[in-house]
Length: 156
Image (cartoon, rainbow, N blue to C red; front, side):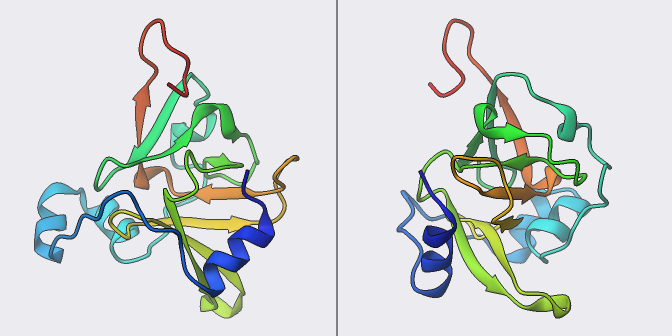
């Protein structure tokens, strides 16, 4: 289980190697994404808080990167943070998400990106629930919900 010390270590040193890499030109990404998805994932934008019903969606399943389809989070780690963006306390795998120090907007934060295609997801903070203490605050437009398969657990 990742904790804040792990996140900082990855952000300051090197992220874990992804299982695969996917790279496209901006024109190729633009062709497969909506304008809002492109603005958030490829240009590090932020969707308006409380603009997505995904914040209140807690059905079993997983959440994949809208750009490349890499599985990022499981519904069992999702919680209602009240912030207006979907929140999770762990990625699905240690190497699914990459971390970068972000000092934009006069703040010191840790940006989260898809480790496969570098899509901007959101940020991670050390104020989440125990046992990890992490709150992955993720733009809903960066995610695609993958329903749980009938007869299988959400993490399978």
